[in-house]
Length: 351
Image (cartoon, rainbow, N blue to C red; front, top):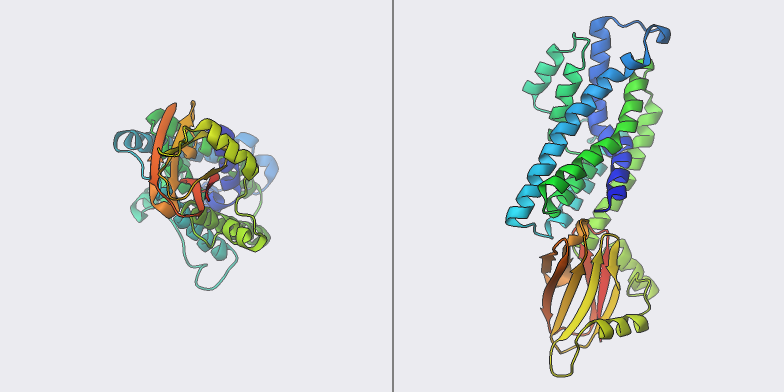
């Protein structure tokens, strides 16, 4: 598992998509607590612990609920398998949500009225608890925000499911929540000390819209769409692959790694690592059966859900071992290979 990527996703989400949805709920709850408790506006009359206690309660509830859902998703993925194509759909859904929230933060008519909140019955319980000086109400809200969609969170949930392990799934979601902690702490502190301004909402909205576009493009890559940025760039520049391995070297690597004979099927071996495919550009002959053997060694990233979207072929790779995708005889052309999230790509070049 690329744990640095998971943590980075949390840091990014804490400042953008999660802040646009869940952050607003937290700030609103803190405001109600201050009003109900009659907290003085003078900063000197409050300690740092007072300012951060609501945030700690919120993050604790969020950590528990997200770790549990990660555990469940990982368990389900290990029992019934995970369709790699779900990742592309999740990326599209996440991107649409992000753009919707971003346009709402920018005040675009028709979008600013759209809000994602937990069920009203749950919020009513939280509101009744705001008179307490404890972290109980923020904790309950943290549990409830699992029901509030956040674009990056959806991506992490897909990653947890594709891990095929309940423990790893729980760890993915827990680390993701911990990554959001710094920015949520900052938002909570500032909401205690100051009144948030319109400029912050505009800046956040613009960032979320851009990230939404990137996320939708990743979904297009995962689906093998000819309209992704990478595909359009390839057609305009004449470069058929973003590979770092030149095609001549890739041909040699494919021949060396596979048992290719004139009479039998072409067997091409590719190492699927947590950081990408090696080599990420391989060649094969047209008109002869092709078998792609993906080899893994202690791999947990989304690359385990590997697919050839334009051929409607996919496989869930083992943590350690190998898995073969038989693509049959193909016509000349380029066939994209991608992980379920569109993060790691390779190209099968048939000549």
